Image (tube, rainbow, N blue to C red):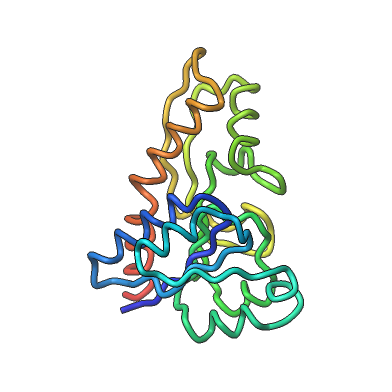
Length: 190
């Protein structure tokens, strides 16, 4: 059974969904959640699911090898579920093609630094896009530039607001993210 460590920065709905999904499979298990925001709701979700959630700071992540060491001990795969910091090169190098992120748009559109959450949905609305969606991709040294694993689309209409776009994206994330993680793990291990 493979070990998953999730990185999260916010409410943790995707982390919770992934934990629950893998509680019912033999493919993998979430061993740890790591969070860079000590006030994030993901801590409460993890507590309710009996999964350890550890807070860390920039020094532990970017300067020291503290987080890298923990990952080498506890992770086969790293999942970014609403995590907003760029992954350091040393972690990318230690886990080649074993770090997976979800992005709330159809990359390569609306990717890059600062493009997350409502920033993305507002840009999609301002540009009057006919559709948007999610992109699940491998993580490399650059924001949102890793190879695409999967995309799912949803149509938009003139009455959509950034908030309704966010709701549509959330539905896609909940529906697909855990299943695509599992299929990717199975494919890599064939």
